Image (cartoon, rainbow, N blue to C red; front, side, top):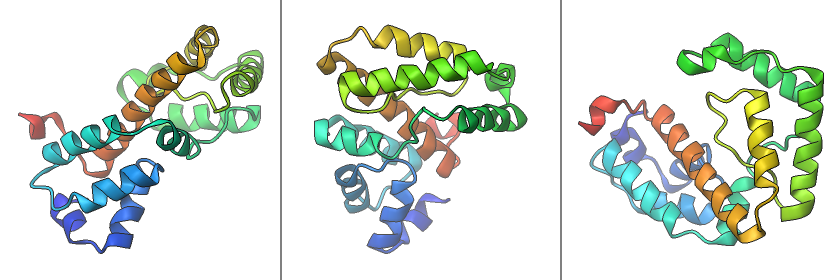
Length: 174
């Protein structure tokens, strides 16, 4: 999508576009109300600024926009799809074994019970065993630390989605 196209959308249509990137309604509204953006780099800067102003209810709302790790069959499908379409570092993702997928599902359940929200991680380029290692290490965090960590991971996901949606390349940043 071109930034001028986004700038010209009606409020509801622009909100729908932003919700593809993050489901926190306050962030979405700020992004829509912040238009027009002169360019993608400026939009990304504002997106980061708005995300930095979010608080726990906003973060939890954003987390709810993610599927829960808990179904080994859907995880298998995810890794199959990633392997088929990934490039660069993602091309090394291998089919996760049943034991790893089950451990991810069980770990996420323990995570939800401990923290009250699902495990959020910027998964791009990470194998299932790497995600499991991150999940296990983060289970030792206190809730405040983990909420901040998950919010940081959510920002990485949101930024990546914005970059993909607006076909951002490093040449835009130069």
